[in-house]
Length: 225
Length: 78
Image (cartoon, rainbow over all chains, first blue to last red; front, top):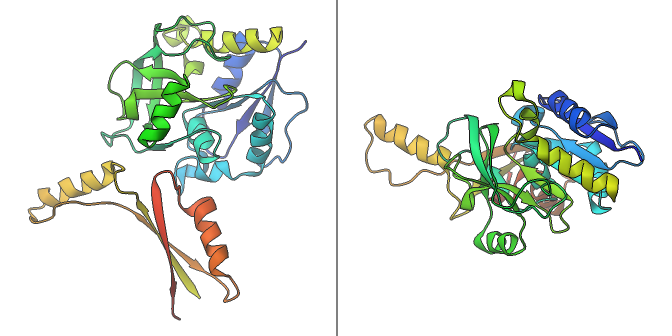
């Protein structure tokens, strides 16, 4: 079975090529590039990735306009059918704005744009995105964002923690996120949003390879399924 | 007709921008300001036929993110 992935490009996305290259290198298979105005996705997708960037110039709220673009209706439908969906950085913002993930991503508590490598703790290695990590593994992944401050009310936070839906937690103070949450899964576990950029750490030339295991997890779970 | 939609952060949601503005106000030497919250004002020019329900729906579907924000819709007399 050939692994079939799609990377969505919105106007203002800037990590879409990095994401496509990461998927090609680590997962292999076919990677389709899809434009935000497309109403339909390619047939038979296993995996959809929403990349980082500044879709629609972050107008209104980060991810707000992209979440209402034509292709997102197809992404929401695919996610509801169980297709694996990963949103990184702006992609995470789009997934919360589209209602596929709980909470919202607000301006960093320190106001400043944060662009550096951060330490993460793998909280859940039981998901299709994280099975190739060890539980509580300490990994290093770059972040680059202005609006990464994860917010949800206490009841929602308690629920997602109780259901094991926190995939990654910052192991240091980064942006003021509630309970240091860096990555969240949906209820069914087939949608993951995270602010750090795993696609930027897949080969040694990039300064680290801790992001590889995420893509290895995805291809291993989906191709053997 | 002009419609104004005021979008503001819910109580209890931290507002880093408001805090920075507050800090800058104090830096300019003004005193007596105890808190600052930053919001957004969106003005729409609409036909008279646009209903309150439709305006409400626009606010809920796009203009405000109700996880963190409240909104208020106000019709402005011409």
